[in-house]
Image (cartoon, rainbow, N blue to C red; front, side, top):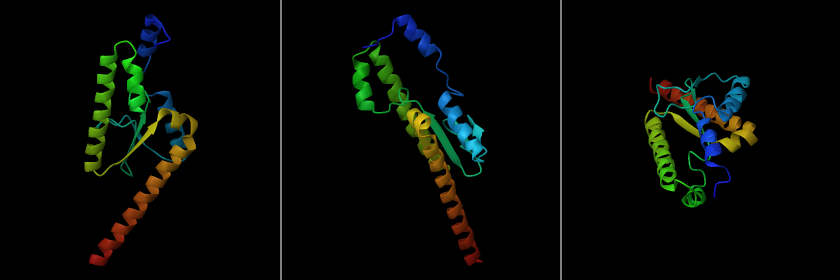
Length: 154
């Protein structure tokens, strides 16, 4: 059951942004301080990643737990008991489907996709940055291996 009035809930939902959210800003700032340069809300890619490190073909999404369906079984039960449940279940289900579609399209384009939950970014920012650093390291290793392979062929 919702513990806010309809007016309070409306005002709350109205203030939710899709760009430059708090979790995006936290992660972007941490990546910038580590020397990573990126594009934000990169519209040239499917799903418009929140952060795109084009040099390494890494697309990063900062997902809020509610709108992207974290712990979906538990959240779905909560929504079924709330108001306007059919709308929210349909909306979040479609968001999760769209996330999967965009991720598949990005992988077909040889992009690495990283997704971080908002709470993980807030509470464990350094671990999120470490995942990005490890992904870049893997990319460098693969690139070096392919360069050596090309030299062996010639």
